[in-house]
Length: 431
Image 1 (tube, rainbow, N blue to C red):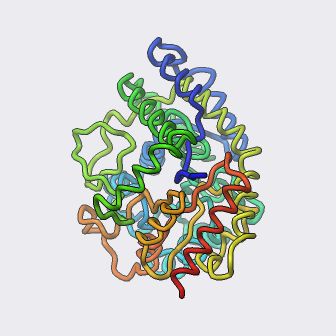
Image 2 (image 1 turned 180 degrees about the vertical axis):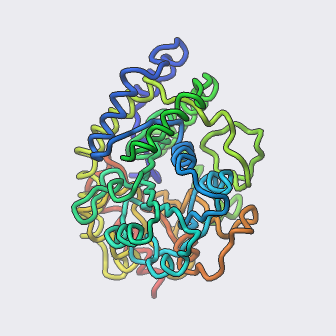
């Protein structure tokens, strides 16, 4: 049995149907199905308003713009991000400030948050990495006490709960991505949820005046990308072909965990690339979420936030039950409260910095694992003017984190195999 690094939550049938819907202009409006999806999200999170966009990046842009902040106001966030989050903040003449994170939960470090807050601090963006939340009760209280707007990025945390509250209900607003691989997903997309009536008036105006219908070419690119991933990670093709390609790659060229970045110029139209450059969001990002996309989003939302969460939690439980004490030492402590988390990812953090050795060990044992797809923006030349010293914990976590495969379709057999390989790796490297 060979286990891929991850799998999509969209079926072949949904991808093929989407192709023909785009080809023949079916469900290419923003009508009933988009409204149905917005209502579904709004009601699930008990928020007053929900808008769907092309990406989470545009959702963030739209909300920050609606706040009418002053030039130079500061937006605090952790450094492991999509580079375009930095670009959104910068393009609105605001200043991104990076915060350190905790080893136990990979969330914002409260002490560093306090130290970096001043009279220019207006917004905090908190990303719930892997579907795990930090101490949101106290972070929310800090924001309330200091009149700071709190935005949650819940793209990894659909259905996660802290203190009996859903991720996405602590902040003034929350943004989510529906990009390939997410638990709630579609042929692209993102959304924004919030409660404020005045903000709603501004966002409604922006939505009506600044968005266009997406080009077919762009939608086809997203569909073809997902079809490719679907084929590569399928049981037949991965087990009999692509696994062996991946097995050969490290012998052809050396790789490392923090070379997931893509250097592109502004002319390349690939909406899910992570170009490590300073730029304005390209104009083609600002498009409507359409009915055919909403139909898939509704399907994955209903399935993966009902039965799906329990499957992933049981999978993590089974892995943990079969781990040695040494292997458990590699798992962030908060993960063990698995009944609270949605688990988009299942992280381990190595102690010996030997990421490539671990990846190759797993691959030789028929399991493909990877590190972060996001970027440590604090270390990038493009964002040099926002660089902070002494973000040692964040850098360590970024460089040493790998993700064990997890998916709704994985069961006890996959969980036990992953546990055995991790136990074997830890035993062999600590002799």
